[in-house]
Length: 209
Image 1 (tube, rainbow, N blue to C red):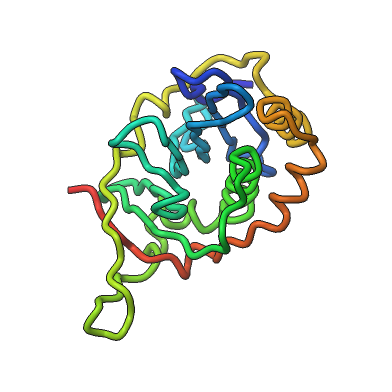
Image 2 (cartoon, rainbow, N blue to C red):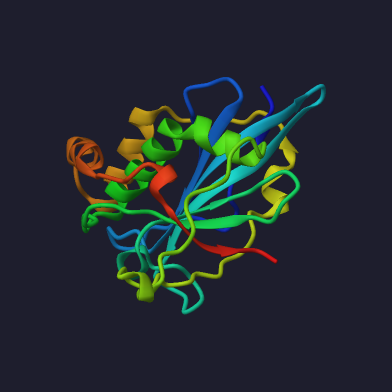
C-alpha cells in the first residue's frame, strides 16, 4: 500500500490507521528525558487512486521549544484545515483543561481527527464552511487569540512507498508511554477523558492569505 510521507525531523514518526480506507494519520514527536516537547498529528486524505495520491488535510501540533511554535498548553488546541481551492483555515477548539502528559494529548488528538474525519473531508472538498466566525469583545464574548501558522505543507502530501512504520493504535500508545515513562493504560485513560468540542463549534481564528 502506498502511504503519505512521514513527518520529518522528529525523533519518532509513524503511520497510524484512521479507520477508513481513504484516510491515514501520521504522528511525529520528539522525546527528551521522559518528556515530549514537540509533536505533530496529521490526517491525510486520498485524493486520487490511479496513481494513489495523498494530501494532508488537517494538522494539530505543539512546540514548546520555539518562540514561533504553538504551545497548546498556553494557546489551547487548534487545527489547521486545508481546502481544495481556498486558503487553509485555522480553527481554535473548545476543550477541557489539558492533561500534563503530552503523550495523552497526542493520543487524544489522533482520536479526535479519526472521529471527525468526515467533517474535515467535507471542509477540504468545500461541501461545508469551516467552524464559526470569531466572537468579538463588543459582543459580550472574549476576543479570540489570532494564531498565524504555517500552511499544511505541500511536501507532506507527496506519494510515498509503503514502509514498516505503520503502527496500530495500541502500538502508538505503547510508544507514547515509553517516551514518558508511564503506562499504556494511563495514556489511554487520559485520552478517553480528554474532552474536545466538535469542529463545528470551533472558532475561525485565521485564514491563510
